[in-house]
Amino acid sequence: MSATVDIPQSIKDSLRKFRFARRNAGSAAIVIKINKAKLIMEEVEQFDNISIEELAEELPENSPRYVVLSYELEHKDGRKSFPLVLINWAPVSSEIGLLTLHASALLNFQNTADVSKVIEVRDGPEGLTKEAIDTKLLH
Image (cartoon, rainbow, N blue to C red):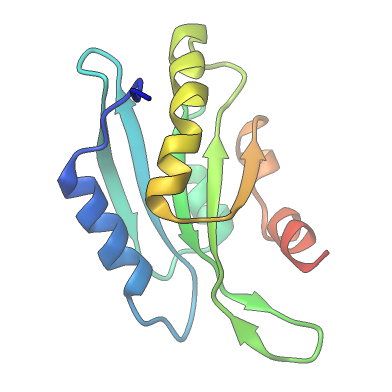
């Protein structure tokens, strides 16, 4: 099976490093985009100790992104965990060709990032909130 979009070793290394970073407070994220001309994934930015609302503001409103999020989740019994979540940021205002490419590479990226939980966000910053993530992860 051939992949539509190449995931370079540098991205795999960044994902591995991100995945195994020890966290004890706050949420962190690594943002990946597809370079449509080269059909290759590129790291946009990493954030440490960022709120979900701040993260939502950093993401483009008309271009899809993959966001691997190490999320500070507070359980009802007071415990904290830091699950890894893949946010599939795919605003409906994105260019159709790019959305299609993004969708076709999602599973390959998800497997490479080794993240089982995917949260789809299509309605921009309004769709990416702490409440929305808590709802998806705690139920």
